[in-house]
Image 1 (tube, helix red, strand yellow):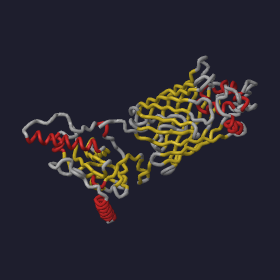
Image 2: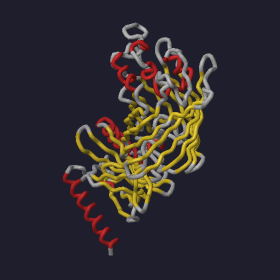
Image 3: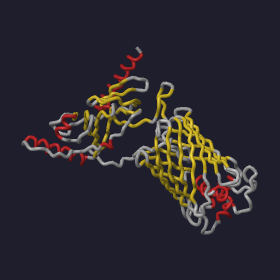
Image 4: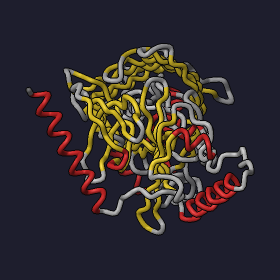
Length: 456
């Protein structure tokens, strides 16, 4: 009885969406008088409109305004329905209509039509959605579910509760991928930025055509892009106000998904530090074991220096999702460049939505690193200048993690008022406070991005 009521409710909801779509002017229009509103597989093959598309079922053209046109295509592939929405210009629509007119005239005259498709749709434009999708209807209604199959110009969708709904293409305003799993009998989204912990990478990959923007402490923005499903690149530059020069960052990451539970990655990160401070380069390898909700990451890195003084650095990290929008994170670095290895502890929380995430964390930073006299665990830092002590204890990896702003400490250490100053003196108030704290805040705001770099 409950399932029947759900079906009736779904039918009424979709009927309302149809009425709303028609009233808003979203009626499909034929691209040619000889074609109906729906272009089926036979018409596509006969007139060579979109090219060979395995599993193609239907296409519709929608006119919204003089500058806004949409083309919807449906197909079945790998046992699932797929849906593609293309936004076209008036020029592209007019070219398609003119091309169709020429092909109909050629057929009427007994001539053959060109073998080249009128508007070829390359395979790469079809995004595989093996999991859940967010289907937004034209009246604003949202349906979350799996695209089971395409039936002519209708999609069969199955909700997380097992209810199957037929959604006509006429009602669909957009479809986007949902990152999530079924947990405790309900759909629960997963972290959109699971390619990294706080600063360190995980063994998970960044899918081709996707990327993310991350802004650390507001002054250190970075951008990453998935070139393929296994290769991603990243880079960024600091935007420190008043600084005579800025920091630069570049990175490359290769991933190998061993299984649904295990992911391996290796890569190189390079931090370009201006003026007379040596750049920092780190080669690393990490392994992640676990699900999308909870996992453990282990890794090791080797910093490279001109004098071969860089020592290996080890990483132990973990993540655990505790709700639909909150994940707990810890990232801990073990520095082997001293007689007694030092550990940089951290713990934090990530608040996330479908694409946006905000990280808040605390790092325990050593007094030795910040210029304290007692050192860590009784270790004597000596009477070297503060910067020298920092590099001696932590090597270049310290520059990658905490940056030269905190390394320098005071206006005197920065060379205030001189040309050698790398950051403005107002930043040293943060460093001065850091010397009196054992826990230091961490902030990162990130967003998952999708790039459309493919032509039709």
